[in-house]
Image (cartoon, rainbow, N blue to C red; front, side, top):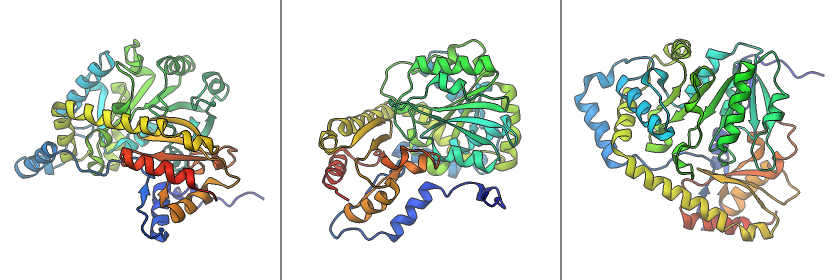
Length: 395
C-alpha cells in the first residue's frame, strides 16, 4: 500500500532536526547537578567581537540607507570585498560580478536550486547529508539521489557517475563537511568538477566552514579552472566566521548569467539581504583577519582534543569516523538505535547530540549507529567531559 500523498510542500519533508532537538530539551529531565553539554547545533553562541558590534551600532544610528531596501544581489562594496578575499584565499581570480549576497547560506542553496531545477529533476547528495539541503529538495519536488560515502566518509566519483540520469541537474558537495567534518582533498573535488563538466551538470560546493579548514594555502584549485563559473556554484556563510548568525548573510559565487536567474528568486523571497548584516560582514572582512585566525586556531585545538581524547571511547567500541571544522562524526557500539540513544544520553548523562538518522535516508543501514558531535561551542575542558560521560555510558 503506497504512502498517502502529501497535501503541502512542507509535508513532503521531515521536521527540522534542530527544531526537534529543541523539543527534546524542553521535555528533558537532566540528572541533578549535571550541567547540560549541548552538541546539537553548529552555530556560534557568542556575539560578534566588540569592534564589529560597534560598526553595526554606528551604521544603525548614522547610515539611513542601512534601514532601506538595497540591491537584490547585495551591496556592491561587500561583493567587491568578498571577491578580493576569495581571490587571495584561493589564489585565483574572482570578480565582484561573479558574487552575490544572500540571506544566509541556506538561502544561497535554495536560490541556486531554484535557478537549476524544476519538479521531478534529480540532484545527487552524498550521505550523510546536511539535512536542510535534503529538506529543500523535498519541498521543491526535486528528487534527492543519495550517494553513500565510503569508509573514509568521502564520496566516490565513479559511484556518483553511475547515478547520473537524464534528469540529473547538479551534484552537491560540502567541505569541510557537515555532518562528518572531513575536508575533501583537492584531487577529489577536481574529479567531481571534471565529471560535472563532462556531463553538463552543475557542481555545487558549499564551503560554509572554509575558515576553519586545517590546511594551509588554497583548499582546492577549482577557481583556477578556465570558465569555472560555467560549472561551479560556490556557497559561503559569514555566520560562522564573524558570529553573524542572526543577521543572515551568505554568498554565492558563479557566472553572472546564472546570478540573473538567482536574482529572480531572491527578489521574490526577501527582496534584499539585511543591510546591517552586510555592513557587519564587510567590516569583518576588512578588519578581523587576525581575530578570525585565532578563532580558527581554537577550533582546530578543539578538534585535536576530540582526536587525542578519543582512546577511552575507542576501547569501548566507539569509532571516530571523521573530524574537522565544527564536527566529529562517530559510531557507537551498542545494539540500540542512535535516535533512542540520543534521548537517553540527554536524560541520563546530560549530553545532547544529533543521531545519524537525521542525516541519512530512512533505509540507511549505518545511520542507527552514528552521531554528529557539534563541538564548536564546547571548550577543551568541556570536550574532555563529553568524552568521559560517553565512555562511562552503558545503555
